[in-house]
Length: 261
Image (cartoon, rainbow, N blue to C red; front, top):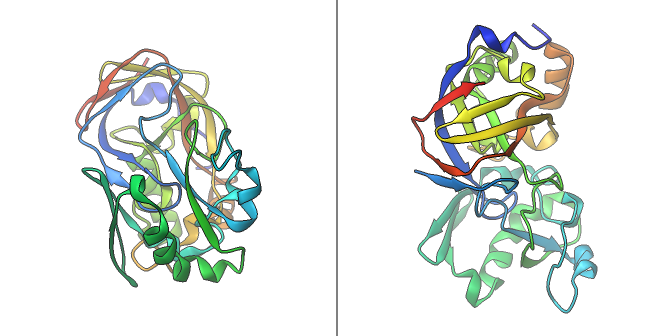
């Protein structure tokens, strides 16, 4: 199966998981609910990122005043160990874990030195400029400069895992909304279509092309394959999931119906 299935064959699913990633490429957290607004990303998603030293030239008066491509930041595609970081907000603190590092708790409002020190051994394998500064973006610091949320399918994941012959899990894909109950690859037939999740309507805009960051096992931070190449071999493309833009506001929660309109 290399193309999209007819989404009309399976028009109703449910929102199984809802995830946010407060710091780009560094951890992530499950949410019980999220209030979405038109033409806005998931609130708090990729709010922060870590610039490496070569990226400091992009700062204006010590602050980041525009979106930047991922090459300016510490990122999993350059250093697989980062993919094993987990964690998110606990009150005003960010709490991060990694199998090779002690648990880190710090308040971004009081300084980023604890985070930068904690990251260095995980970023060093990249062979790039050292991690330098935690910055807050004027907009979500996602890989694409558009106000998208990402939508992925558990049925499609099951098919990919079957073709690859190994478990992959949800964490390596760093998606916002995971839908259960759609036919495998149904989301690829939704480009240009509208869906409703709970009370929120979204337009499906484009597929998500995958990079080598998805080749890392998120339990260990070690590479366990070449995911883009395997997607190409088994499906004829390197996509997994779709980007969508919110059109009507509302709050979504795991368990909400996901309806193809």
